[in-house]
Image 1 (cartoon, helix red, strand yellow):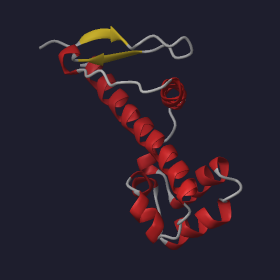
Image 2: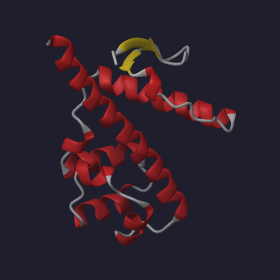
Image 3: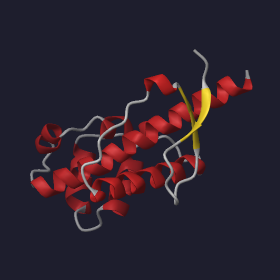
Image 4: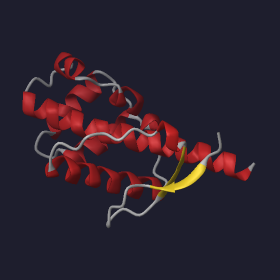
Length: 142
């Protein structure tokens, strides 16, 4: 089973290539144009983050998590930062948060939980892509 250099699905604003096993790919259904746009936005953010060689989210300190929250949620910053500080939420912990855990740390409003979980999902993807990129870079040098 050889790795092949195969292009991603074409998005005009997101040009990159991934190394993968085509037989393991699974096409996921797109339920609406809104889903497709959110997927494209997520891919753009991931590509930008990886291309900038940003510190992996899993290695963020509590202060870096607070900075990310301040940039993403300026209106809810005090509430979110209080929860992060009180519960010592690092990047690794942030990536593992669920709706139940958010409620336990004091973020109860459904819309806030949903928005935060969407952003956390994008961070997970960003972190995973960064890790895979680093792994592929090592194998390409060998």
